[in-house]
Image (cartoon, rainbow, N blue to C red):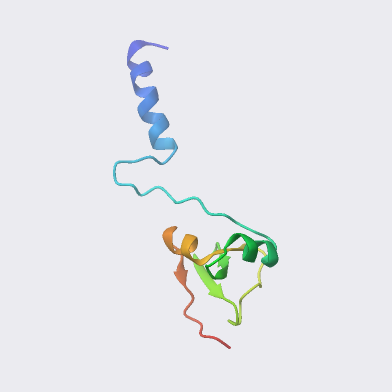
Length: 92
């Protein structure tokens, strides 16, 4: 490794790990396959069904809550902080 590439290594590591100057790195999410476990871990917060494909979350009582293979349960506040948006489908 030459001197120039050695100086770039720390910068590349920061970029790869998402620690940018604008703070746009994704917030860590606690993801749960089981709703009961999510309710225990999200004390004081609502449990939502997080859909990775649409980047939306569904609350209990909504038609798509708990459905789909590419989704998991998480806390609503964590979903919001990570950029997920509330579903446009109302309670049904």
